[in-house]
Length: 312
Ligand SMILES: CC(C)=CCC/C(C)=C/CC/C(C)=C/COP(=O)(O)OP(=O)(O)O
Image (cartoon, rainbow, N blue to C red; front, side, top):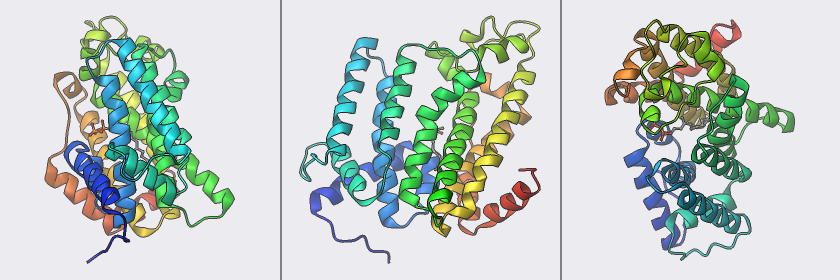
């Protein structure tokens, strides 16, 4: 059986808390995280629990000013983590686990500030004119998580390879986030949010009424979705170049996370209007199947062949 290195009981308890949060709330990413050895699994759970907290503030029912002050409090906590000022017996398990993770792994912690910046964009109710504008948001809320995850995974490359790996991890984050935006069109509209770029909406006649997730008569909603699906696929193809740079189990984790989201994209492509009816999801057995394929390296081999042929 795998052993975790000896750690003080409060730190162990803090990680157990974060792993429970991940198991209960990361409906898709938990499948990949479970494939990691204990130390990396704990670290990813700490990152997930912190990110969940930030995300929940943004999505919650508080007034915008209260959201802003909660987010600033989270930023202060991050500052304490950065200065290594969180005690092992602090009452906040997410702080304890994140501080321990930051001691063990070379995390680019600025990525968590970017996440907070991204959620602040949500609180301000920002909309995006172009894909470049939306990309800035996606880099904050997802690219940054990819780069932080890479700090946990490590790479088998030198300094120049590490830079490329960070770019691929960031791109994979963009692919996941764009998929997430397509999947959650209806739910986001319920929160009064439209993420898809205004110029894409206009191109497919979908501008009017989009906030209610009910495209106007004559709109080419399927055309819009297919356009964004192609964009997401290109991002996946580029981001998958990360896989051969990772050790086997980190690669399996990434292949499972990305593989599950790619299958969501396939479903959305087959039936674009499904995202207007409700949340598109995969059955648990399909997610487990994708995770097992990730562990056996099947997806990684298949994808790198496709990537080499420029067709992933
Ligand atoms: C290299 C690497 C690991 C890159 C991936 C980075 C990563 C995990 C980005 C997260 C982006 C995303 C779509 C979050 C949604 O989380 P959620 O909890 O709302 O998702 P859910 O609704 O699908 O459960």
